[in-house]
Length: 240
Ligand code: ADP
Ligand code: MG
Image (cartoon, rainbow, N blue to C red):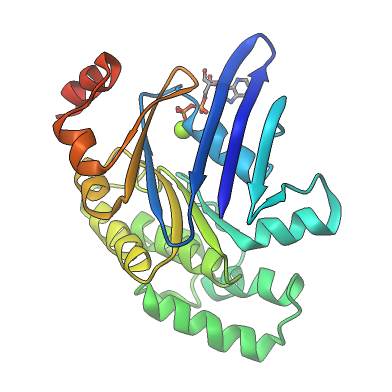
């Protein structure tokens, strides 16, 4: 579904992705962990081309990542992304947030888009908030609405970049539950998170990044019980 081959990315002098190769198969849940500044967000952002790369290749369903135009818009709509900050449109109702892209991009008739949006909002447990604006919702509710908004485009895969890092502790669980459910329904997911229990439960594979490189890649059982590299051992000991 998603394949990166020897991807390199610099910000000026800073080499942030160093020969990164990784693949996510259909239905697979891959969790990326690693210290702050190791390049996790940059990696996510290159996948739907919010960032360009300097060398290497990114393939989505075997096809090179489109450079621009309609094809790129199409790709972005097929890969849902949820960020740390709930980037809902502040001036729109939750319902309008969810129906905007389906009506604008997919040309779904408004009534149909609204009916589908309500189902998705129900699924993530915020249907009763549909007519409010984002600021009237808790962080956890906003993040669940953001997930519904991404799902409204029928994505083939979902990218999550620390979706619970900005949440108050009591709201983390409700967002992780929605993600766990998605995973169990077979959604292909690439998730950056510091929630280790969650990672252990849902990940098919864990990737450990440090300093722009993939240092370790293993099953969650192996990774958490027997981290191989010193860097991974140190990282795990700081968060346990
Ligand atoms: P992580 O998500 O693992 O914390 P990031 O991908 O955000 O790491 O950042 C990797 C490195 O790239 C960091 O050193 C960060 O400061 C730098 N960086 C990230 N975004 C930019 C940018 N837009 N311009 C310059 N440097 C950046
Ligand atoms: Mg980050």
